[in-house]
Image (tube, rainbow, N blue to C red; front, side):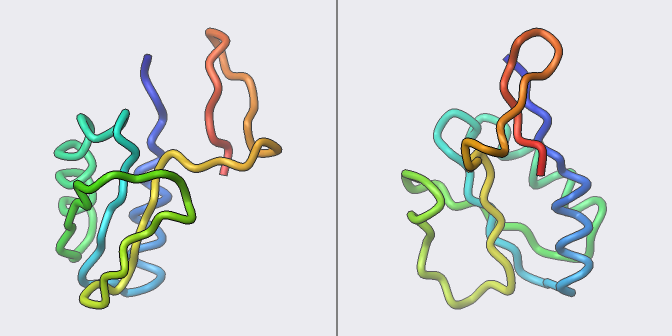
Length: 94
């Protein structure tokens, strides 16, 4: 199953916030995409990107890290934000 990680949205947010150090938090099921995410974000921004490799239990489970300018989480949707996409998959529309 493939997901649209909406990496361009992350790039725009990093640029909008002028973030220099960004922490990316992925749920366990998307951690295999971590290098792809880092490569894309570093190529398209001036930020240093770090991956949180600890467990992630939802959008209330965020790391208490003071050394970063921005934390970006993937895989968290409110039920009202879910919508069907071609192939019958569920995706995040934000």
